[in-house]
Structures are given as structure tokens and as C-alpha cells.
Length: 130
Image (cartoon, rainbow, N blue to C red):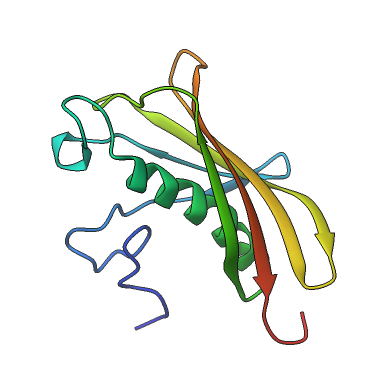
């Protein structure tokens, strides 16, 4: 079995996981997700911790897709408005800079009408000689 099969965000073996699938496009990493009632905090609104999980995953995993090993060192989330349950979310992340082994990332969660409900910034630490 390959690595990370039980990852809560992307692992195919995790029965309660989000099972996200990703693609690289135009120097960014993208996924989509439709939150259900089991993903809500307040009625009809996605739980903020799961929104931060989506952003963390799309940003940090982008470096894994590039063959690097890295971990999140710092994550900031700005919730711009409530994220509704039952709508397809577009989640994207991209590299904004690098200082030594620290890669600066940004990401966003977008509704089908183009409304951004959350934005993220992260510092991702490269491990090893990368």
C-alpha cells in the first residue's frame, strides 16, 4: 500500500475522509468538494475547521505533487463569508514565494458563482535537502 492512504483529506482508505482528488493547472493546484450535512457547524454552513483543512491540503499537497516532502509550519485562514452546505466548492492553492526551505503559499475557496468564501496563507517547510 502506498503512503498516505489514510489521510483524512485525500486518503482513499479513510471511510470518513474527504477523498479529495487534485489536478495541477496554470501554476496552481485544484480540487473540488461538495460539503454535506455531516460537514456543517451551524445549520447549513460548513464547519470552519474543515474549510481550513481544505486550504491546508491544497497548499501543502501541491509541493508533494512536485516531488517535495514538506509540512505546514504556519496556516492563516480568513473567512470572508459563510460557506454553504450542498454547493460545489472550488479549492485552489499556489506558490507565492520561497525563502530557503520555507515556501509561501496562498489558497482560496470559491462558490460556483465566483464568490470567495475563504482565503488562506501558509508557510510550508521543506524537509531534507529539497
